[in-house]
Image 1 (cartoon, rainbow, N blue to C red):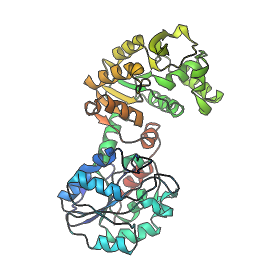
Image 2 (cartoon, rainbow, N blue to C red; image 1 turned 60 degrees about the vertical axis):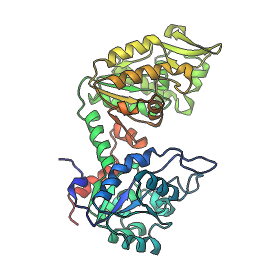
Image 3 (tube, helix red, strand yellow; image 1 turned 120 degrees about the vertical axis):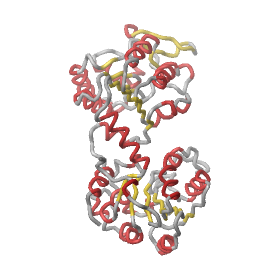
Image 4 (spheres, one colour; image 1 turned 90 degrees about the vertical axis):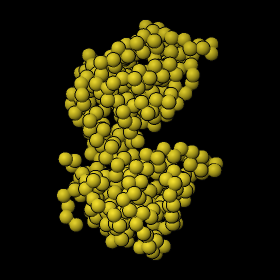
Length: 408
């Protein structure tokens, strides 16, 4: 039994469904055209199911935020969705005014209506409780027209915003198929993983990862942690290893003495479970050159892990039953420093382990290497995934759980 409702719990035929999705897309800065439609594609199973079951579907989404260059209407999103669905999607440049209300009232079973950018309503981004949001004009105008609220916006699940939580107070509510899939797979990897469970952290974000590492080791979710990228460098520095000026500058403002002190504590506590690189790749005379830990400090940036580290990490991953992957092993965009990411990610893609990957750069690397379909689950979440891994409660998920036992 899930602690939130899903589409399996409702008959949607001839019912008006408010569907909140996360279609906040990357846009071309000059043309404002959508340059990657992945988020729309991932929401298709929910939209297709509602359409197939003859629901009257009303889509709510946001793009950018007020004042930002990518704050545009949802018209292009509606056209992209129509093209991907192969079915008519009506768009209306209104959220809860007369135009929107009349359009919703006139929907027929199987119709799909896309409303304008919900962030054009100033109250959308205010941080309030679901009960407070439920009293706003957006919720009060739309909820009487609907029979069900479906939230499929996992990537925005960490935001306590109006259209994401307010409807759960006044309407029967459930998770869409993408939300359901994300939460089911994350629970499998993070709450009751098959052992051994190996977590690999790489990439350039490192400050928040420290909290995550501490949590997954103290809760015995992970058995071993493999580190690459800036996170690995931060752990090496915390041990007093001089990396060289360029590599230390890469820590930026986040690299405070207090943070490195915290890293030292975490490493001292779990030294036998945290693995750090033994060698690295740098650029030397326009070529890839590998150096050992003993050759630090260097004047060159550490752009990748070296062959000894690649082999050690593969050996550790070989027996894994669960693998969590967050962040590339090096600067994979540069062919000289693609090796670590390519070899480790390819190795994981061939593993029989339950594998889960998340984070923008991780997904980009998997796509570039054409390995995305070979990972058990690729998460759409950035901020929401990080919060979930840190053990923080996600406002959207909590609102859906609360709505499960509510009588309407």
